[in-house]
Image (cartoon, rainbow, N blue to C red):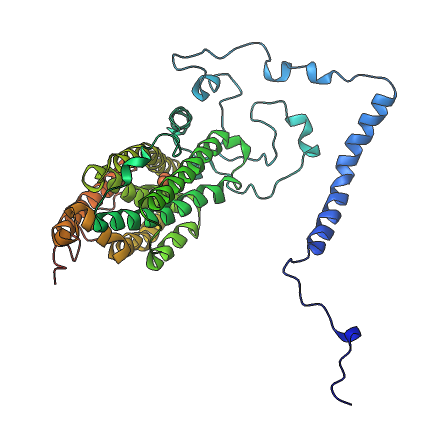
Length: 400
Ligand SMILES: [Fe+2]
Ligand SMILES: [Fe+2]
């Protein structure tokens, strides 16, 4: 009679928390199979210790000339450049074969077959990651860290008229979106780069920290000024295309040469865009950081081209990529959530938005020229092929 439902037949609804059992099964299997080599090492160690014997084999440092030379401390302190002058420490292979944590310059050869292999380390060519300025840039990054909590005169952002306050908050919301992608890009590649390129990894770690601070400072700026405003869907596709770049060099080109170059140009015009001392300070401090990221990007690109075994082919592939990549900039500047707040800030108010749009047109021309100069410096001539118009197509002509 009636519907045959009993409490016994009721099943629990699927839980919100996915089960980790399968992942744990795999981890267990991998752990056990690693245990063969790992277990042998441990077994030998236990046997020796049980026999009451010390090894002291690690005290033999002849293989790498232990004690034969010491780095000279330079006027700035003990830098990466200083320690890399020590023989065996500073030489970096053109193609890295070590996929473990054994430090470059350590005595590691005898242990090669006992080491784990981290397959995620698959960016093995020096020309894919190196730049000749990466070490001083790292030192500079460490020396010039600042605090969004402490170093901005936050009380100062109050008191703007509504149009300027909203424009500042919209621009800050947009910049927060940009900074998320800017941080995720080096984070994505950091784990794929082997430890022999430790200086590059260290620099990337500072870039991740810088971008975390930028998203923090713009989030705080928006919330202090009234609140976060609108997301920018069109440009999110552009940001995603940076993260999807087929290799590190191409992604670096999009992020550091093109995208961050644009952000640097915006920050550089901070005197015109910033309406409060707090905003000027935010732009000034972010600009210092972005200048390092752009500088790495330019010289990494140059190193890649200068050292690639088939430069002509590499250059052509990069041109093909740039033909597409350059489009992301037009996407940014066509979005109302980007060009309108910038125009209002440049013009000094909503009633001067047309004047501000003309100013944006001038900023655009400066930006494209600066981008082409960065390409020149990297030895990548985009002047004949650049797909971005030198004039903002709607610059000064949006007036109703
Ligand atoms: Fe940034
Ligand atoms: Fe950056």
